[in-house]
Length: 461
Image (tube, rainbow, N blue to C red; front, side):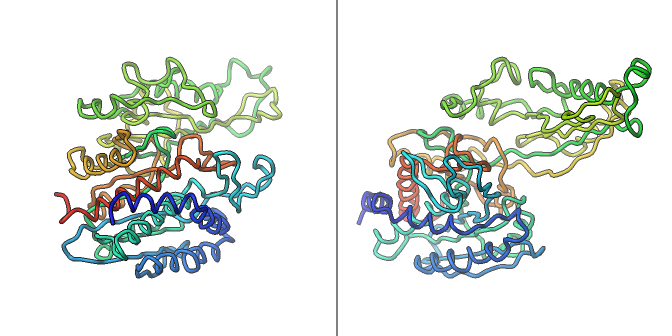
């Protein structure tokens, strides 16, 4: 059997309807990790769906309880040879709230519904569809090789990604030996675009910055006190403008990343950020000067105002409010100095005349990525191009955040993500979906990658 046979088997899995039937069964599990009443569903997805699926692939699997007791994990492995490469694959079976009643045409989020080239359902894009593609590709390669993969494979499935993966780092640390591998390769997040295969090597980090101005209890009549009482909302918006200006440009050096290297610029030179008609148009004259859209999104830091509050917007009173609050988020790339960041913001605001603004941090996650010089990157890119006849976009990191640092830092693995959704997939919203042409191509991409992995006589170094 050949590489072409493995890819043909992946296509047949799609065209026969077998893959979509499998995905429909998995979507039916209401695995909302943000819903405290779904504990039984989270466990059932692993016990009744994942374990039998891995057993059919000749994997041994076991459930691992989370240290916090919030959601279990599943670790599965298939070992063929001590000298063969070993890949660690990741997926998460939990989803966000189903948002029943908010879907177009009253679609049921817990069943897949095909309309045109779209397949709707909660988890189709994030992440049940993506790890199901990878498992189906493993099956195609195993069948093509007569019951063998040609490499060693390990899989970890978590059920708490949508609540911030609170136990993933601890579980991986406690199971270092069981998860030991040569390469981490997994799928989550969107491609650069629906029609361009994409590899990304890590993710940006993030930190929420809370700004609070608390001047007094209650509001005071603006006619009686306007002009003599400080307004916390006015103070707050002006304080924010000293951190990020009206065009989204960072104003404080401590918030900025290191200078872009020529290597990063070369990888992003052919990357175009082009929204489809269903996606928002890019803003003109927004973001750091002198950077392309791709460089701003994948290689630079951004400070976004996520929420602001002062007074009552629905029923405004003719009164000066007593307090104002805002939540900002810094998305940052590898190399950004996060230690001392909050102190730097606080000192900057004091220097600019805003000592009354209280500054605190919450919900931070690390930035990480694989070194560009890793031989695994060229290997993966060559494999994807051989399958699709398209040069994949290679991004230094995902624009959003994933627990990549757990695999790159704790387990010490080169990390390559091969996403199978696209930016307009409506993940985390009503009408989440995957695209049929993209899904078929993704199955072939992964079958090609897994076949090529089995062709390596030993791990790349």
